[in-house]
Length: 161
Image (tube, rainbow, N blue to C red; front, side, top):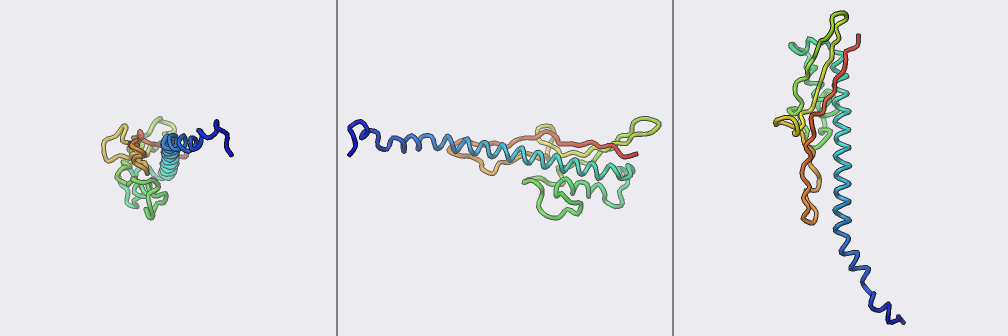
């Protein structure tokens, strides 16, 4: 038998839970999508670094004449994680067209230092075609999650002497 004081409290916890559940779910989705964005950014940073390392050991003359398709292989390394260009892109929405042609720079006289820079065009700083993070869940309880426009993701490596 319940006392008169507790009889007024039946179902209050359930109503409080129902009122706070949408807020908790929105916070969960925001945290999850933010974590995915960071994960994708790290994945792209590593892919660009790998492609810069791949190009740094190549002859800088491939900037003008590339009979073996080494630049295309480097772009495939950025997008697919392999030089062949097979499989799914490393991140949703990433394509080879979003990876501009790498640039080589020469500095110094003795010895000449060669560096190569490769990048993914981010929509925050580059014109289309560019890469932007798209969340898996577009909206929850009327809260819309927009896309995240990354800046250019680039890596520069020096060619070994």
